Length: 212
Image (cartoon, rainbow, N blue to C red; front, side, top):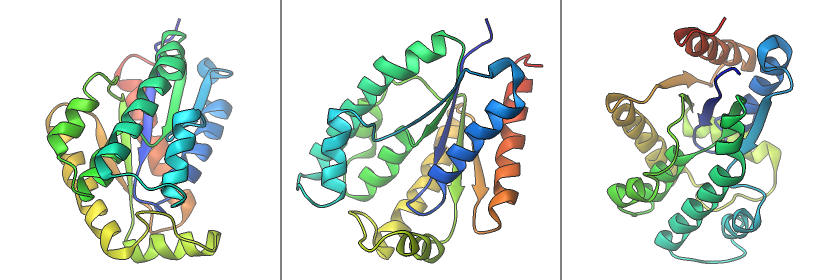
């Protein structure tokens, strides 16, 4: 059985992580014959009961403190790992995950939650084989968000997103220095150009561990 892989796409709201995760999954299903039928596209927050609670907070329908929200994200992630990520990795699937713990580190620490505590909360999570951090200027991201819907969600304010973007880049650099495979892909350019760069990183990842 082929090795399972966990590839994560991250970034601030509007950077394109959801669209690029979907496009990457379509590419993998089409082009990677060894993984055809074994490409799993998933996301966080999940569609489970804890994820539904988180979405209600993000839509400002429910108010909780930043530490409580961080705990909800961690709980949702642990269920995601139990129900989807570990089983599919054991089956040798290629998992493409739209957001993972780097999002928690960036967003929750920008909201005032201690980063070391956040890392401890997530210390039992499987490490991604590759994290792709999509990066674009905040004004570009907010423009895309406003084109897609009428109301902004929690966290979708310029000053806050500037801080989140800074933390994404700083924490990604730290994770890379600690041994994780993290790459930054600029998305303030044509979608296909960014997609092609993401594909190159994924192909390089697979080739680095004996994939043919």
